[in-house]
Amino acid sequence: MKDSDTISSLLGIGLYSLPEAATYTDIPVDQINRWVFGYRAAGKLHSGLWQPALAGLEEKTLSFHDLLEIRFVHAFRQYNVSLQAIRAAAAHAREWFDQPYPFTCRRFQTDGRTIFASVMEETGDEALIDLVKRQYAFKQVISDSLYAGIDYDREGEALRWYPLKSNKSVVLDPARHFGKPILAKSGIDTETVAAAYQAEGQSIRRVASIYELTAAEVEAALKFERKDAA
Image (tube, rainbow, N blue to C red):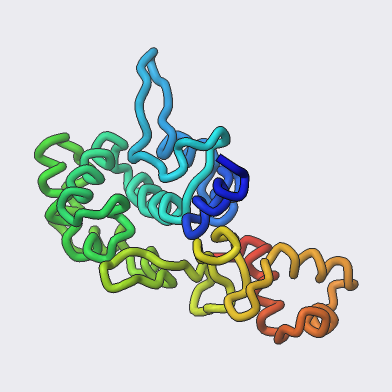
């Protein structure tokens, strides 16, 4: 396959190295690696929680949907839900919703407790008890903030993610710039804006003039690059 064919086949998927995924989600690299690509413990190989979209690449790389899904896994782990229970929940949810990335699916916000209930019976995971029996606990884990900033299509599949709270200036869109963070209107990547800010004596006005941006757009790009994203 030609290089151009390879690049064409990756368009619309999103491409993120493990360090990039860690930076954008504020989740440690080693955790992301374990969850998506598996790990070995006590001489036994444990597969990832799901099959990543870009498993065939030589370098470990996440797709846009992998990137969003790990945010939900992180929320479960923060509540001490075991990887065994998460794996079972993912399998149930994939079948239930007919979605390869079920946690990101909007329906999980309303139907997830039913899935957790069946998993609790299978695994005996004590951390799921509150999630199943107490509505407030479930809402704490599967919070609105996890879904905030995600645009969905009619089938409930995530299209793009605006990572800054209450601000749609910066977007990760797999259909644009391989899903890397860009300014939504201009398409200029946030890394370029941040580099220009340093090169131009940390002048927001000068950067805005060079790239024909508003000061607010420059500030949003800098905010994201400073890892103030939600």
